[in-house]
Image 1 (spheres, rainbow, N blue to C red):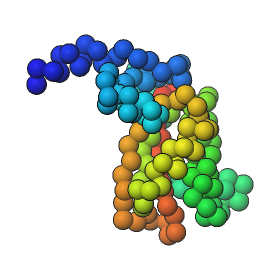
Image 2 (image 1 turned 30 degrees about the vertical axis):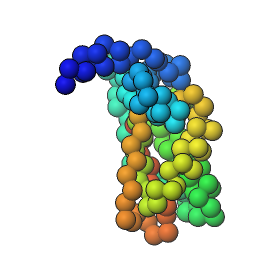
Image 3 (image 1 turned 135 degrees about the vertical axis):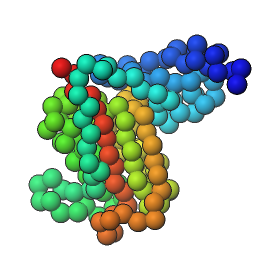
Amino acid sequence: MNYIPHLVSNLFDKISPGSAYMESKWLPGPVGAMLRSSGIATTTAVPLNGKLVTTTTHVGLDLATGHLVTSSREDEFTAIFTCLDAALRNAGIQRGMGDAQKITAYLIDQDNEPILQKIFRNRYPGHSPAWATAVVSAIVVPNIRAEVQAEAILLQ
């Protein structure tokens, strides 16, 4: 465990320019480089003077009709981020998912993670929230490939 003080002293050497509401940071070395290349932060730091806004998990719904979007994985995942973005903005988060500091994704197929992350990176370039993904055997809503939850800080 002698390496921990060295890691802690060097942990916060890089900061994401993505958001005024959070700082994304990466470990130095290969682990940090791997995460950075995937657009995932090792840690995110958020100010404590505000409110934590947490969404429910969202599936891919068409906001105009309320119908499930199942035409393709890409369309479904795009609809998920559209729903999450709208939910965060409705709660007062100015840049919606562009200010999310944590995302948790539940997928029924691990092969969907690169697609989900590519859609996120294309919509929110340069933004690197903490991200957790779990592969589950099923999602409560039938014929759905993913559910995603997000958190953001509403500063006061």
